[in-house]
Length: 208
Image 1 (tube, rainbow, N blue to C red):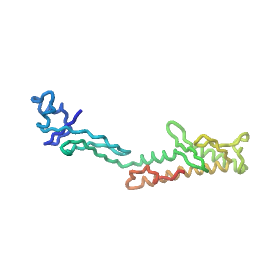
Image 2 (image 1 turned 180 degrees about the vertical axis):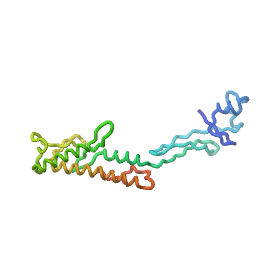
Image 3 (image 1 turned 135 degrees about the horizontal axis):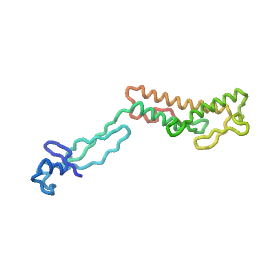
Image 4 (image 1 turned 90 degrees about the vertical axis):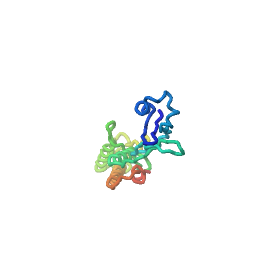
């Protein structure tokens, strides 16, 4: 549907039905295109919607005349990020996994649909500590089950053999990964204005 602007009053948007019903109902013929300019109305050429990013909204501005042609205009406004936005980015990055001894491990936070990995880290690290206190030595892969070597499943589904001492170090790396992102998110939230690019890598710990 074509929109029009009433040039004298800058009233916009107006449709042909608006003009016919409330402006000149008695004199407009079925085809009004040839009369609109004489009556003070001009068609407004639509413009392509500009792309917008997160926390941005689009608002239509009054059209402007360029070389005698009225064209549609848009304004992009950016809403400031909130603490909840930072929390969501923090959790996404925590759950993206971390590197330990050249291998990536998953570190999903709990959600409504699935349990997280943190109880597994803490529970297995505690079991490893108890095994060490009971005499488990470096290189002993049967500290958890005397009948089978212990292995941790990596993010790529490969199985990485680990002794009790390595499991404790894995747990420490997982905790450091989560802690570093928690503090980075806290730093962002304490700023007077949260940066618009709060999702950029330079605000967050590096994950190799």
